[in-house]
Image 1: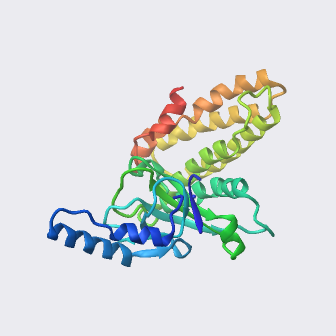
Image 2 (image 1 turned 60 degrees about the horizontal axis):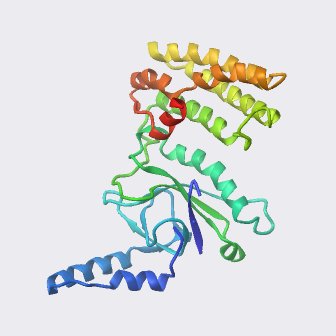
Image 3 (image 1 turned 30 degrees about the horizontal axis):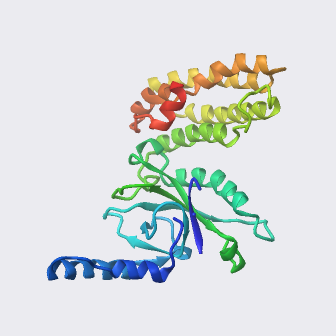
Length: 295
């Protein structure tokens, strides 16, 4: 049995219970009952083990929320659905089950990065779509399960169409998105647990070093992209990279925050909108990101 988690297992019901629920009808007319039976039969025919999910599959879980699950309903992407598999990988280097928290930590780190390769412009994702994943449980690990399936999915509601845009984007768009996503991945993947740099200065300096390195990589990519707004963004990010480097080399918490204020505001996603528009990319800042920088 695999477990689904938001950027974390759809907690499960057994396959038998799921199939029985599918076939249940409570209609007031014969025609309604027939239609319901047909829909139930179609759903049963579409059931597939979570262990056989493939990248690109669009699906509906049989349960709601987080938890363990054996089967999902695979549907054509043109139909409305809850999620789509964006990436997968296997957990390696572990001789025994590392525990739920460690497995989740591995998936939390890798899934956003891997999923972004499937849909590089995360700003263009349908509203409410977030990264979820199926990962091994202690029981499935004992049977040889090591697979993590990274998905884009909605916690409530559905969407239609495939989210796979990697093959439709132009090279300069891919370069921009890869560099930009790398900056924010570096920021959040290295976020210290302490809320104050005075409590974990080494941790905050390590985060600043990682973001500065990601910005340097992004800037190299931007050099190969033409455009007035892209040029302006490149100049602004070059200054921002300098602030992150100062934060990374700060002697104390006070010096860190002097540099950090300009460093953090320098990667405000709102400052990338003009360049994104010039490149033909989505220009609406995701609500979660907008909230972070507004604060």
